[in-house]
Length: 244
Image (cartoon, rainbow, N blue to C red):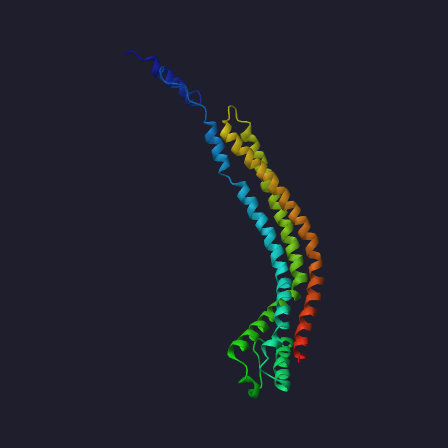
């Protein structure tokens, strides 16, 4: 029996590391090189830009967390200052007693307004609820201000960790995207897309670095600012108690 050259050729091919090209028919075309556009598209699916945008948001979240009790203290002090006018229906000792109860509630860390029975009936439920909301907010703000020194340390550590993550992502992105730009015969559209992402990565990394450096400097002054606002807030409650 005559053995065809094709069978011999394929049998020998098994001894040559099973080359995938060893058993092709003469009429079969050689395997096409990978589509450079598809390769580029696969790379752009790794969204380095979104990852860095996320880290940028984390930096801002750390700053906002530290700033919140300070902003709340300013707002609260203004709300407290406006309280005496809202007790306009009370006169003399009755008004002084009601406003004194607000100060006492603040100093005692209470969230309820404790009024003498003779005065309580003259204060509307709406006004009482408003004052108690202010007292509850005051407790929250005081706790936030007192926690600022520890929170600044925690935030500074977190910012350092974010900086490391940003550097890692930017380095990986630059390596991967730059390699894709070197693909032979890369289509213009794919090249522009990859270059755009590379530029965005570079810009975002710079923004994150700037944000972190500024935040690390700014947050160091927050405990002192918090202490000053704490004094201002206490003063606003004292002023309420002595209002006429």
